[in-house]
Image (cartoon, rainbow, N blue to C red; front, top):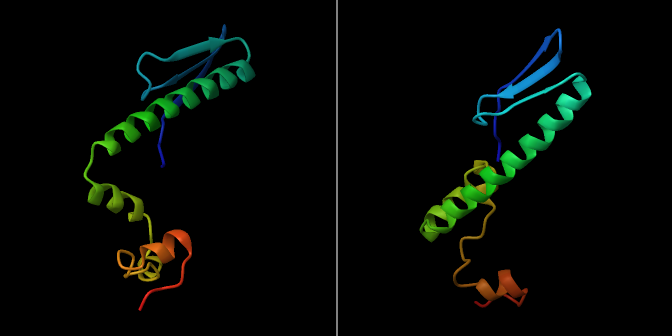
Length: 102
């Protein structure tokens, strides 16, 4: 999952300030740039964790075919061609490694 965030870091006479437009109401200030970046990193990690858990909850309420489509959405055509087409018939082979049934 790729998420793009817009971050603005400004310097003024009292130090540094950072804000992120995607995180509502977020702004951090400090005298040191290192402190601002460290706090910004922690906040973004928390934000991405929340976004990820929200998307997982949304996915769990989708039909199984929609979940399957999401799983293979990033595959190239050549990767899709390598997927087995007999998965339903040969499920024991693909899940448990038993010999294929003719």
